[in-house]
Image 1 (cartoon, rainbow over the protein chains, first blue to last red):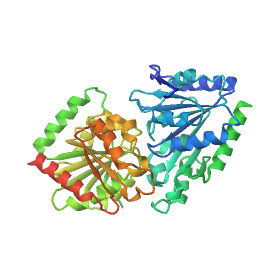
Image 2: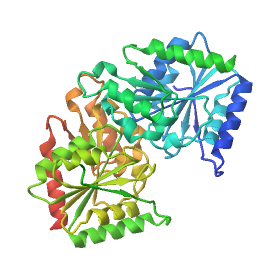
Image 3: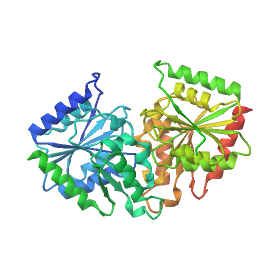
Image 4: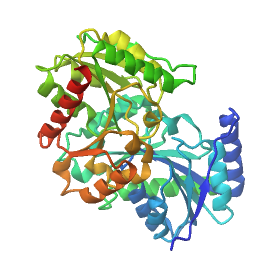
Length: 222
Length: 222
């Protein structure tokens, strides 16, 4: 029996999403909660990466996860097994989360006992990039089977992310994936982007990602 | 030097997309042009599948391709090498194509000498499913690395597609992909969906897909 709450989030009718996002970040700062917005294509390994991340950091931070999905609960059920606090956000067909929807999620999650909140956004490389959720940092996962040309095709997503995890590097020999070209294309969009090749399933490269997230969280919550 | 045209398509301000889509289908019928709308996640193999499809059918049908992308030309350049007529559609950040945008594309492609027109939609499992493009049939590709649970998470896409190609089946042993579960979940969304496992790279399963597409095209153009 699953214990997590499921919330139907509604998009704001107001168009001032940027103002709402800034407001939310200010409150997160006062509240000493770091919010990470994690984005990717469907099936790139967000949930597996998240499970490993929680396992590595759960003794250092109180972690809360918001699993956004159109209408299933499979990811929240997987995260619940890690022991982290989790809620499911249903967007009712919406392709992204905005700051207002993220606020509804955080209010339902409850942030008073959360140091590190993670929003697993809808699997989509287009729309989530267009809406500031109020997160402190944006992270994205690109998986090897998707191909190294994705920064050329989904430019905004690569522009707005602070960190790029290149996942499933264990299958690089099977796919025609050029890591150096991927780096070059991604840095063309965003020269200050941190790029970390990982394999969430085997743990390869995960230490560098965990260190980055620990440092960002500590710097924010003080 | 690339020869294909690049068109900036604009979304209709009108909300009557369904009416426009039906109108477009009527005109395609009169014009004896079959339009296939091909959708998938980023990196699932749409362009590779399309190249193989063109190679198999180019002696039977006059083929025209519209490559929709946010702002790159990499797919149109790949398709151009097949010898098919191709144009690039740029959506300027938009996450999907609607019937009005598709009409702009078809007008620029020119359908008078095209029996089989194929729209390669934006790589996205959410938004393209919400807008009828005016296509005669909808096809989607799900690739093995994305996981067999995707019909649970992106229900509308699986509901509206007539055919599902499960691509990259050559890497099934590497990934934890359950073909029977995938079938079951997809048919739950759409019991009449045709499901064809393929490997576009090696050609496995492609004959069944080509036969389906040939039959549909012939039935439409008469």
